[in-house]
Image 1 (cartoon, rainbow, N blue to C red):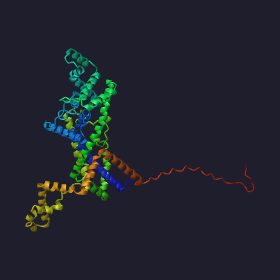
Image 2: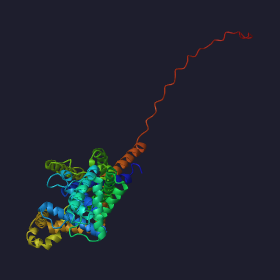
Image 3: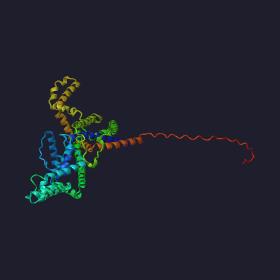
Image 4: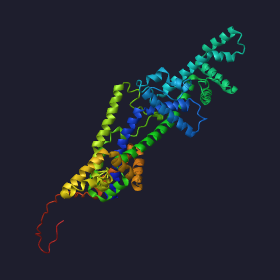
Length: 482
């Protein structure tokens, strides 16, 4: 397995997935920044998911409504007009009207934040609840006093409500809305706090034993738990967008992964070149942020180029320029080299293969017939080639785009495109981590099998003691002394 053709083919395929995953990631990030997808996801999660009653909406209804809201915001951003009537009276919309939240935006184009710290969420929500209490204090006082004729007594109740503690104000506000929902008579103007949101807030207030600091902690935990789910939603949305980007890239560059696997298994030269590029890529992209797994505290959304950190439009456009440069460098660098090694692309769009049929279809072959016999074979080929080039340039939608669509619809090639797109949707961090492991495995195998064992230097033998020769001078018959 180590340093085997199968391992090299696998490394080559993973390298291709990594390159196009990097390209798809840059494109996806540009789309997310251009249309503020993170900010829209965060707003929908807070306004619709946390601070609105969505129990009456089914799963698919919620998905369709979310899509329509996003589409309406994009149209409003481009044209300045909104076609969907939104309930701006709800506590969710009031939340995003707070000055602190507005301050997180990056100007008129990126007016909504893509990231809100937990402490600020609880502070803004409680502050807006107190603002709602101030706006409803007369109604609350009237609901607590059954005799509206006694104006002086009513004013006293109102004064007591205004001078009460923040926890008492929240409790009175929740009790007021609880009374409205208990009667079953909903005012013409929709209440600021929906029933589900009211029940959640009441639960947290009871569990905190009516302590404001504890209640704030409960709100923050609620927000953190919600953001964990929102992070999962955004990852799934990004994976779906990346999948469709992968389909588009596969069609544009003709990245049929089934054919590429067959080419790598047969062409040793192409396989070796791709392995060398893979080894270089491991070192080149090890510090690239696109291959790193981003983990944020409490699962909150990752700030994008339209976040509060980039408060000036010029810095945002610099980020766009950086992403554009990364796309361009990939297309001109490793992707161009890889495509050249594997002959990836649409070639001449079937011009040589279907050239005669195209000429007959357009009646050009007959018009050339009187001329072509009087020409040499090479000149006749050049004449037909010029006609084909002109037809393909003037009617490129019919011949070039038509050829790509017909070839892409073939079963085996379409399956290769689908496999490629699914692999791209797994993300650049996944493929970089896998490529790094495979390259290390190959290098380890190369050292074990390909290397020669260096001879162990022998330790020089210690110098032997000098041999002394004793001459026996004893005469026969005498005994040795001592």
